[in-house]
Length: 302
Image 1 (tube, helix red, strand yellow):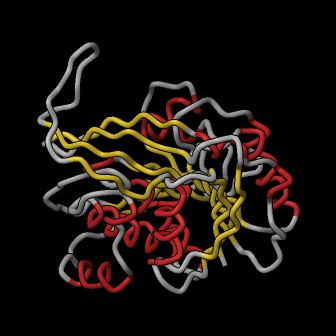
Image 2: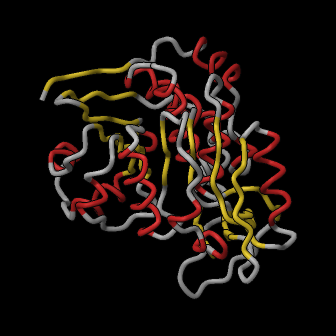
Image 3: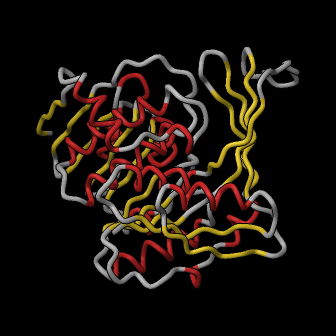
């Protein structure tokens, strides 16, 4: 059983020829709203990955933005632990998606920043706690410490990118980052391998976009090639990877198999619009993988 503790945002998405440069106004085209937020996206991905009962701790305002977020999570089968905040609006994100599928995102955290240590529900029965950094850092540390004390596997997707205290890293069992987030944590501009060696975490996974992903776990470096797809919108692909990876690990899959499943799910998410609306089901991932049997992993001892 997985507990995701983190953010939920309503995404305001506009498609445009390109992402505006500083001071530039770009005339966009389609506009839609989608349920999003790193925490909520990852909870939906966990639930859709199958065989993983998923709960989510989240904070929402008392406004109209909260309703579509709750509806999306419930539709995915996520069990909610909702903190209702009276004096803050539900979190929002403003996203520009370019024709080349790149995006630029600005987040207004709102109620997400009201989550506190006292909001954590009883952890009995949970095997994994999945965290991100769109809620206060001190809250993340409190949740990680509580889970560690009860023998629960703590997974941190260290996004958005920021420097992290060693006290937090010491509580993490699995760290998931992209290259920018890895650089922010290590303050090192060298190779990925050099950066990974600077992190004292049992397992670290790095997503590399079109180059796939790699991991360092117990002295073994493994990699997974990316799956080739026609990308429409990459919003939420990283969250899809995180949620699918944790779901696979929670049901006893090896790290290499979890990376393969997560990479396939993230690739499929890139072929659809929106964050949670783009996350595939377990059956869709299995069908996709049956057509891509040649994409394998590689391992080497460090």
